[in-house]
Length: 190
Image (cartoon, rainbow, N blue to C red; front, side, top):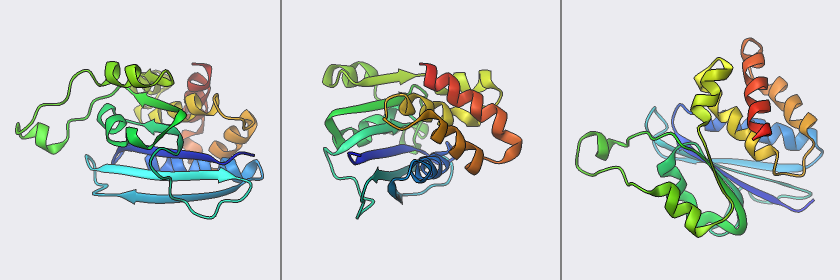
């Protein structure tokens, strides 16, 4: 298997760390080597969080270098821009269209940038924007937005869907399984 480099970027509380656990478990289920590394600032609600995940036949380091990401999962629009330079030439950037104002915007010292979706789509044809938060709410729990994003990503990877479902069953708490399986399936169908 070709090495797959994934960056998961979001805001504290959006499930980026759970996402990395599901990706890691999926890789193990599929028989691949996997390395995952948290690299984040203030992960309290509102702080930027990024995790690298790499899977393949043999992985030595968890770090994804600039221009090497096959997939960037951006759980918030501004995070898409923050990590965009890490996207490889043929890579996909999958963006939750939700906007979460960072502290400088909240206190009024700067304005939230406009036109991010249009900008990203001009630079790469492999940009996917989805309202994962709304989809997760319709599935029964807004916190499942991360699993919606996993579903969108999984459809674009050469890893059997059953491995993803098995990983969700292993990692997600039992009381939230039904919602998360539905969220994954809806994301996978997009």
